[in-house]
Length: 250
Image (cartoon, rainbow, N blue to C red):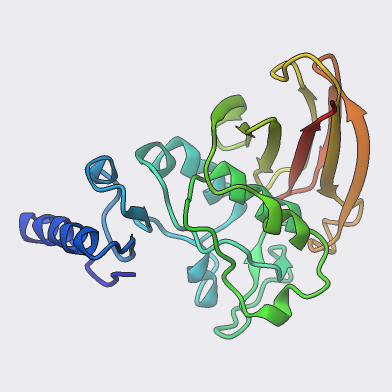
């Protein structure tokens, strides 16, 4: 990781290219933090895994500016430029009334399902969790993080409304991952699975629990069979989300 560059003048741009060139000679991968947004340099130097270039969850250690509403804006803005490390994996979810600033063991704004969905909403080949191991032991939803792919074969934007929600479907092999992140307004959502190829799929569905407005870490998990004729009805909590893994039945 190369960090604290915080500039995009010509000298800094040249330096980052030199870093990638030198790292490639030694078969090393690079992750840039404190850096400007992607400009396609990773096409020339694929040893650039990802870069930060955005205001992300690490700021929750000191303020409350990174909110579910802010997350909604990222796919429409920074996300269009390329891979981003957003410090994902915060499992101490809070709402606006319960959020408190903690430098150690920080909270995050939004529900647990919102946090899980961000792993698919954003592209990042440098998969990670941001907290120490005890934060994840026995925690609902952690199994999703352990299995979610880091690269994708196909992507479809199922639904996207600025300042409201983003629903994205990504495919890895025969499996699809369908996720939604919601703004700070609770809503009901009907999502058709018409993007799926023909056949039946086993859907593992992680959704906001009925009390997620008071306990944002609570989620429900159900398993059901679906196909491309299925329309899923989802209740999204304020700052909520949903993640679905769709495995083809053979």
